[in-house]
Image (cartoon, rainbow, N blue to C red; front, side, top):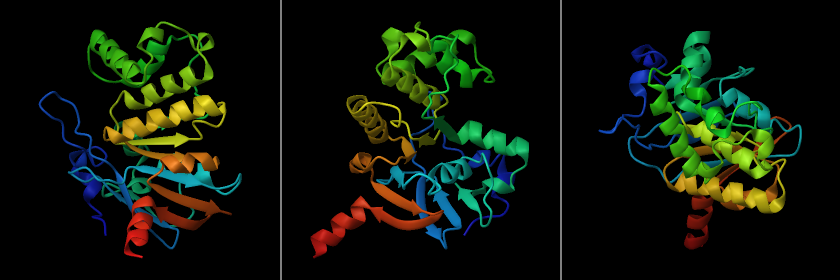
Length: 256
């Protein structure tokens, strides 16, 4: 199902990276989780054409394993059994350095607690993932301003986190996750500490980003968020309790 030599193609499977267009930007191909076998093997591919599946939700009560699932998918901790294969790369078979390369090139993380540096402005926080990139500082600033504008916060670029509302801080965190143009965004309870109105604004933003071609895997315990998902995986006691696709349900209803 996967090529054992795939990761040898480049730094961390880099020749399998989404291609860049004439403007140097990566195409908005989506990482599409395909299936889970015996709750142990997660297989995902990065298709060369856009897929309708690109907004996945992981649900479950506290202690069900949602955050652990996301950490394993993000290469932050290893599975006790099985493999995690993304775009033909067995990520937990990579060396520490290659795994760091994978996270940098493939993933953007959004955390419930925002994890913003308090003494840096919104713009500077968004620029952080670009620190190790070989590009002129003015170009980094332009890219950070671009993604801040995408999340509706260009006018707050010079403000410190303490000067921003909770929803604005979450938007900065999302912009920071987007700045490197990763194929996959992993969001851990991004609305967990927000009120219902602000939560809806953040979910609307994530849905809009998905419609533009961004793949998102989000962990949440909020049942109201499921209306935004195209696929919902429910966990219970560390096991997959159900795996439901909106499209599968819709087709089944139409067939009935």
